[in-house]
Every structure is written in structure tokens, then in C-alpha cells.
Picture (tube, helix red, strand yellow):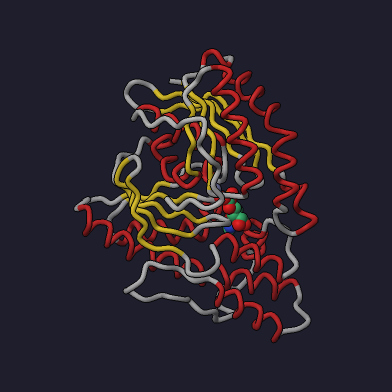
Length: 341
Ligand code: KG4
Ligand code: ZN
């Protein structure tokens, strides 16, 4: 089956066509993403109203391009999937309404996909990973461990009690006068910094919790920066490196703990840890996760960066898995700003 996937829940406008064969293997036929980064950069963050309007302007053209790249037309599709939440509601409505119109006009099944489910199922598309596996979703809006036990069977093991990890990177960057989005900027600066110069806290590093907390780390970083005015370039680099070292320690500790619990619950001899979300592209975080997997004899899967960040292929793929299981939605389905997995 060939599924069109539409993603408009944040600041990426994306459309993709994914093929799912009879054996349940996936292949991406087209995957086009337009990042609205430049539209939002002057404001230091995503402006929902600007994002929604940009999705309206861009989406039809991106869908046409995706079909063109896949070498097919609407008539060749077996279904149309769109993110129905969670996310910025204006954008979600744009994508879902577009999918409904295509489904109605071309008489196609509609798949209203949870964006988080899209992230959660991506490793089955990229690496044919079998259930069950442990997912660590670390993006601008989420930081959570989820046991993925089957399609629609997701068990959240821990989440952040305050900021998401990507948000902590973004706020750190803003505080230090670095460019938006903050994650890549902090990682670049950290490369020339001394990770031992500032002793920042490792919040919630206890064996009784799989939750994260990052707001205290951000505050400690602000106080450290204020204590060494003027903050020269080397100090910024040292702060970034120290921040990443603290994040790495927390992620390694929590991922090890989560894998141990996941193995105990599932009996998997070689537990699989999958990382998704924009922060999974960070190399220090990737190293910490690799060390956690090695510590418990597990296996780490990180999809390619383009499929870690928001994209249409993950929505198309989640739609394909749902359609294959007979889980089709009606045209009355509503967009949701909040929608836990
Ligand atoms: O998954 P994503 O593209 O969008 C959602 O939030 O859904 O994730 C974006 C987040 C931003 O907070 C960004 O700063 C962070 O991922 N990020 C990174 C890196 N690349 C992106 N954080 C740390 N290191 C990176 N290399
Ligand atoms: Zn996302």
C-alpha cells in the first residue's frame, strides 16, 4: 500500500509518500520537508500564528511535489494520513483538513495520526525493528520513555516534570546569546569548551524515578553565567560543554535504568533502545545512549537525523501500520492540541 503523510504540528511543513509491502516492510518513495526556521528565527521561537499561515501557503505545493517525486498521482494512493495532534492547533487543523479533503474527493481511507505515535513507529520503517522496544523521545516538546509493545500499545515509563530536553537546549542557547534553534548551536560551541569548568546539577538522578527535570539545570547555568561577567567566547563554550556533560550524565543514567526495567518487564534478552526527536541528533546524547545500551547488553537504534526530526514519512508510515490493522478514521475526527500516547 502507498500512503500519503502530512505533518503540520509545529514549524515543519512536510509531505511524504511511503510504501508498505505485504511483509510489512516500509520504503520511502518521497519525503519533502519545508522548515519554517527562517520565518520564526527573528522571534527566537516558533510563533503559532505565523506557522499556521505558512502551512496554508506551503502545504498544497509540498503534496504535489511529494506525489511527483514518488511518480504517482492521487489515484494511486491507498490512504491519506495526517497528524491530528498533539501540537500547535492552528497548524494541526490545516494538515488534517487538507487530508480530509483529499480523502473525501479521492475516496481514500483517512488516518488521523498521533504525532508521538509517528515518532514511536519510525524505527520500524528505518530499521525494521520488531516489537517490543523502548523509545526515548527527546524533542522540543517532549522528553519521555515509552515502552512500545505493539501498534497502539504504548506504556509511558517516565516523562519530564518541567521542561523538555530540546527546550532546555533552546533556553540555554537564548541565555548565552546563541542562535535559534539552540540545540545545534549549543553542540557546536560545546566542541571547544571545557566540560569540567562548571559543576552543574544532575537533576532527579535517583534510581526510583524515570522522570526528567531540566529547569533546575537551566537556572544553575544562568547563575553560573551571571557569576562570570563579562561572559567571553571561551566561557560560553565552557558553559555549553558543562551543560552537555550534565545532560549526558542524566541521559546515560536514566536510559540505563529504563532499559533494566524494560528488560525485567518484557524478558527481552537484548533490549532495544530507540531514540527519536531532534535532540537524538546530538552526538553527546548519542554517546550517552550508546553507553547505556552497552552497559545492559542492549542495542541502540537511532534513525537518520532527517527522520528523527519532524517529517511526513513518519506520519505516512504510522498511517500505513494503522490501515494494515484496519484502524481507519471517519471524516468527523477532530484536531487535538493535547493528545497523550
Ligand atoms: O523533533 P524536533 O525537530 O521538533 C519537535 O520539537 O517536535 O526537535 C526540535 C528540538 C529543538 O529543541 C532543537 O533545539 C533540538 O531538537 N535539537 C538539538 C539538536 N538538533 C535539534 N538539541 C541538541 N543537539 C542537537 N544537535
Ligand atoms: Zn516531533
